[in-house]
Amino acid sequence: MTLFNFVSVETFQDPRVDDNSKAKWLSDSTFLLGFQNINSNNHEQDIAFSEIDSTLLLRTVSVIGALDTIDYMPANVGIDFVNPDSIHYAGTKNIIPEFWPQESSWIRVGLLDRTLEPLYERFYGGDAYYKTLSIMRTRDGGTFIAALRYNYLEHNDYNDAFFLKVNNEGLVTNLAMSPICPLESFIIYPNPGTDYINLILSENSAKIKIFDMNRKEILSKNAFKWSE
Image: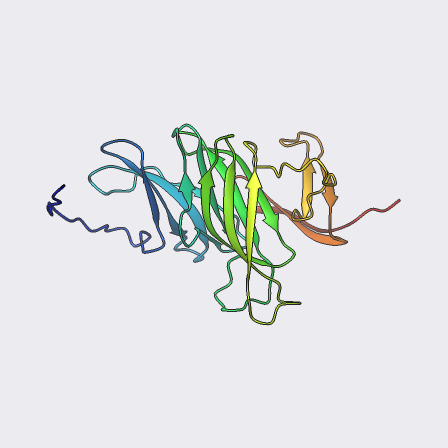
């Protein structure tokens, strides 16, 4: 029989660390923390990550998000890894603080390296309201994501359970699918691009906004699906 004795308790002083924050051990003395980063200037909320030691102070913070939506960590498990060189994370893009939202959202899936720099990021959804619940790394280097799906055009105040399996590049692995995954609103290639990029839409039209590295909007225009 193992006895557990109370040793001490510490309280985070940073207001961003709340009951929605997620943590996973990196070593005996440090852990990775995923939390909501709130911009004090415009109250924009994004997903953020930081390595924490026994001082419980946030180190360099890596913020993942965009200016146009509120992005949230999952309700349960938001980060998972076997080797911290490949840190998988998930979240919800365009969270709506309503019980039965009348808008679309996306499941956000990404991978960070040991320095918390993004290696890739994918979005699935857009045809209903999705709320990501958890992410679990799989043996093939990919991830398994659990979520709720609410189709506000068809459902009568109920959610469907929704599960998504992606490979080690964050892509759905079903060879029978069309070039555009039915859960993906668009494809951009090449990525990164230089002189030009190609945009393939799964919807009839879209609003395109491009921001520079300082999050300043440099382009805004409408795009339409091309048909032969």
